[in-house]
Image 1: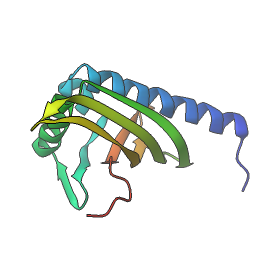
Image 2: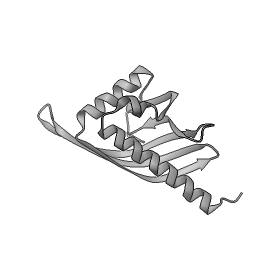
Image 3: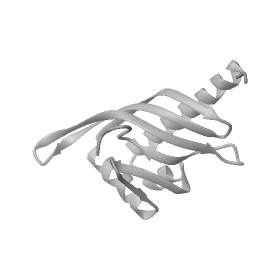
Image 4: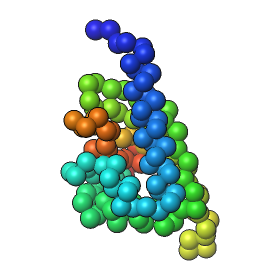
Length: 134
């Protein structure tokens, strides 16, 4: 099987724009718009081994956004098979002191996305901790 490099580059650019939009909405604390970037049955894994969905997903996103002054993220790698994509995203966020300690978190997320019939990419699995142990 061969892959058209131009198509792969275009998809990578689309996914990069999606990640950039996610960061923009996260930093704006626009949780409603942020959840529109997810499929209805999507899960977020706020802590290793503890996936949440639905209202729990919105709550987890709001909790993290509330801790952060700013979030940065860079799409490191993307692998696609048809309309499914696996993303490796390097991210960092900082925020004001929480329980006496400044918030400074970073990691590499492993996320899964699907392109819908409307051509938009949406998260199926948002796992910010990547392969971090439970």
